[in-house]
Length: 101
Image (cartoon, rainbow, N blue to C red; front, side, top):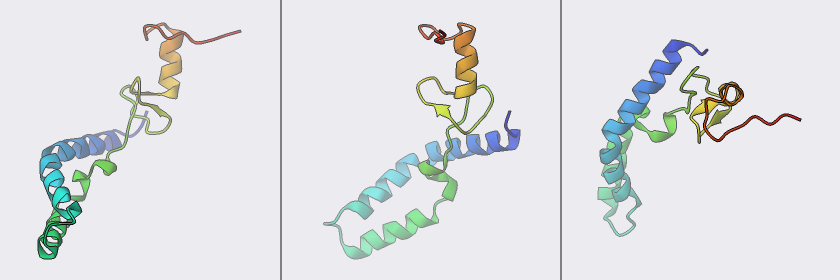
């Protein structure tokens, strides 16, 4: 189990990303537009830099839904490899069987 502060910090980041998603998308579209005036692109870059750092999508860390573990995260199931193995062994994931021979 990871520290609860790390889990809550990440949840806070997820909320900030959702809050600023539209603003960031508009500013990034202006910055990436090569036909826009140079001054307008520069101002959009400054506004983008003025937004909170944690509102960037890359700052969010994928974490296990059960334990909060940040490493070896499985995207398909949303859990870490440890929990995935336990859940598969107990038959809690439909259609997934832990192999044994």
